Image 1 (spheres, rainbow, N blue to C red):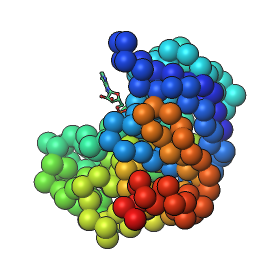
Image 2 (image 1 turned 30 degrees about the vertical axis):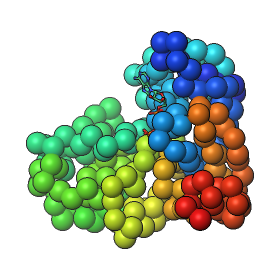
Image 3 (image 1 turned 120 degrees about the vertical axis):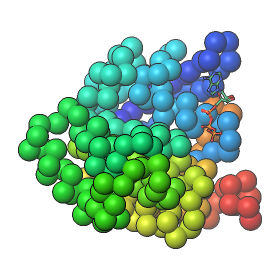
Length: 233
Ligand code: ATP
């Protein structure tokens, strides 16, 4: 579904990504793990077209994305849940979700809203509450729900577990597994290697802007180098 080939990205003269190649098959959860500053967010944002890849190719459903503006990329069935959630704090849950479904038809919006409220019953309970008054976990659920309003085929998530308690992370990751069953392809960028590798069908390790390891999620969990560097073993 998504193929990156030798993608390099720069901030001015600083090279943040070095010839990154990876792929996602339809219906997979693929995790990208790496330490602070490895370039995980840069990779995710390069997929979205900001910043643009300086070289290499990003093919999505057979189409080249490099060179296309972000607004166009985001209308191709791709949705992103940004780092730090970025919900609209002063708007209600209902309003935040409505913004995510901005481009959908009225009927499509209602169906998808019902579906999201079944996935995250907590959002239904607090439908008219202001997003800024919710817990971190609830805000993360809202950020995911908002992204799902556009009915993406490919969902990109930037560190959804950041700052959340293990129980809440478990709940959110279970929902990601459910979305996979529905056929949504998921690219999960995470510092929380343990949970991200458990959930993933396959995973990649990014170090200093380079892919240094790849494999099945569970196999990487058992790898001594991964254990030492990312699992604190
Ligand atoms: P974190 O988990 O801390 O967000 P990350 O793996 O997502 O880390 P990036 O945020 O992608 O890493 O950063 C990769 C490198 O690019 C870092 O050296 C960072 O300082 C640099 N970088 C990121 N954004 C910019 C920017 N807007 N301008 C210049 N350099 C940047």
